[in-house]
Image (cartoon, rainbow, N blue to C red; front, side):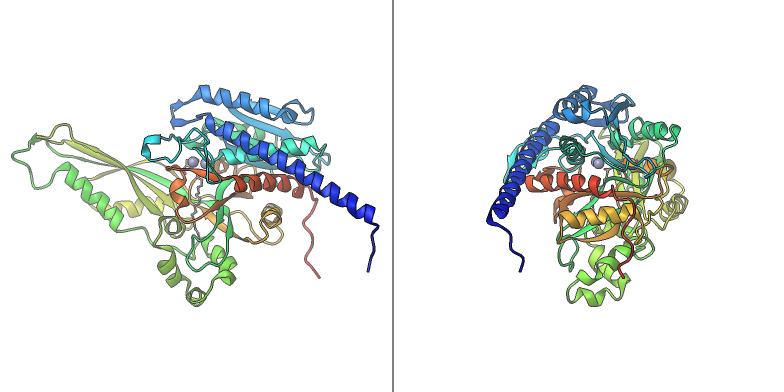
Length: 476
Ligand SMILES: CCCCCCCC/C=C\CCCCCCCC(=O)N[C@@H](Cc1ccc(O)cc1)C(=O)O
Ligand SMILES: [Zn+2]
Ligand SMILES: [Zn+2]
């Protein structure tokens, strides 16, 4: 047996305790800074209305609380589209292809009156959670990424592989000034990226029936979108002599037909098949048996909940419905907007055709408002650098978590980066437990203090893990 002198063991113990103490102080500060960031209401209300005062204040905050980043001669900082940030961190080995981390500063509106347990811009701490708009979408990543870089610079770390950090200010309105202009700038500089990591899927814990233990789903694609406007025009008149069907009634039947006749269950035709193949060994009895018939499994287990249902089909959401001017006047006009999120195995054109055939009523005008096809599927095989480095980092920080590919059901700024990289991933290591889906854009958005500390450590580790030149070869 190897023997070490007592003084050496004592010294190592002292060093370990010291590092732990430094890390604790650093993480306590980090959590305070997340709170300060959440208190700034960087709300994107609509495409034409953003809180620019808050966006300016956020810029000042970043410069104040990350002094190493903003004074370092290594890091280049640029403002893009007025309020978005592009950071360039050159590596010491320029032949290594760079990667890029994305997050966004803006948030959706929040109203305390909707039933928040703490005011949405208070960052109040309750039972170990920080409450506030942006705590999971997506200030935890903005602050987590910068905190990790600040800490690395403090330690004198020089990366070997160059990387970029893109912080959009208008993601919630699809990134027309932020992400779009960052991409234009990088393209003009001839940049190609080894991989891109943006917000998206999370660590699911207890969300899928039968799955034992937590699973980190790395979004290897994201769904497409179609928004259509449905409208009905009928002659106005006195409500005392109504026709058999009003414009409202005709339109209501059309949207009911769309809701009742959901788009087909396409489980197994997109990357969600790989999700369950990767997780198969983590299912307990009797789910493991049902797993052998994946289609049956998908209807029994996945279609029941809105979040898992979104995984298996193009979803239909009637989001706006307007009509009527007075209680005794037959409305001349009724309109509704329906937002579809397109499954990976369908196209925008196919979905538009299905919408028309499902409504099948000449009186209902169907107009295309906006949309795009599902995004390409990024590689998740054994020798794909980005996927494997993200996976390794998840295992480094969360050893108990199983990693698998998944589809991001919402859209992200990374959608604009397809010309810069084939390998785009959507994942942030927030814990997602039953009921948490309602917190995205909903009430009581929150993050546990422990989870925020893990997020900082995740990015800290990812920046270092990305510095390896090649993935280790297959074990012999
Ligand atoms: C097997 C288990 C399946 C469980 C799957 C469900 C998990 C859900 C987990 C997390 C939610 C994912 C949220 C992703 C980020 C969405 C970001 C967002 O809200 N985007 C908006 C706005 C937007 C942004 C960028 C665009 O280019 C277009 C629109 C959106 O409406 O999607
Ligand atoms: Zn987001
Ligand atoms: Zn969002």
